[in-house]
Length: 188
Image (cartoon, rainbow, N blue to C red; front, top):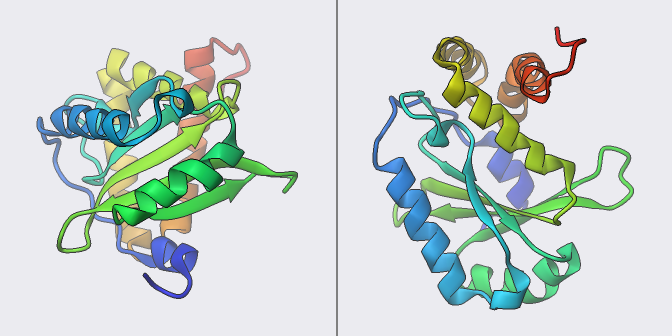
């Protein structure tokens, strides 16, 4: 593990791949694996989200998952030791106002060290569950999914070695589509 895992994670290359119909199976297999290795009382629903969950959408070949947990402190004390022992990288994100943890997440890698899964643990009332709205809206609107693919390819070309800049370059589109999915009248 690198001495600064956050910096290492942010500097890894961004590569966009054509849609792979194996991604939903990779999600299902990882969800089953998590249910088998983690205490049942510490996890609830598990959802596939992000570009790999949108049929036909080009994406980073990394399956994004949301996992419900009753409390983020249980992730640090009970879940992280299990997953780290299995080789996952453990990271966390602070709330925007730095008032505490927004969510905890893990990176699963293959034998060659390539990311295969991002596993995000959220409390039931976390606003990050709204990411499912974005994904569902892209599924329902293929023209928006195609627009998103174009934006992602351009962002990857411009910011391939800077994951934070890559994410920022997609931000306005994600906000606009999420507002549409919510039904906000003031959507851009």
